[in-house]
Image (cartoon, rainbow, N blue to C red; front, side, top):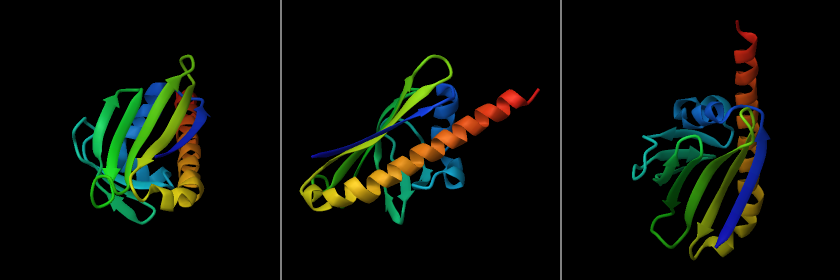
Length: 147
């Protein structure tokens, strides 16, 4: 098993960050890592996720509004290379969130991919976190500036 954990502070409400995360149609506009998600965010539903040239079809394991979205995907068959991906929001007051983004990898092939997971995959998570921060904070500034 191998775990990746990243986090970033975002100066926006949990509602704003959550709405951006669940607006799957908008991912191609702002997200450099996960290029698209199709499907319904509901426990038990299957999603179609495209990231950096890879497509997979994870199943939603958890959905707690403004708190957590978690899914699990697999490569070919269970137990070979599985990943449980998560987004979690930890509110800090009314207008700030710590965004936790990570994945727990398991399966026979994980040791062979560890270097890539700690390198390119982690970099992709961080790039997405930074883009989400920009998107949420820009939307917050725009909302405050409008009459």
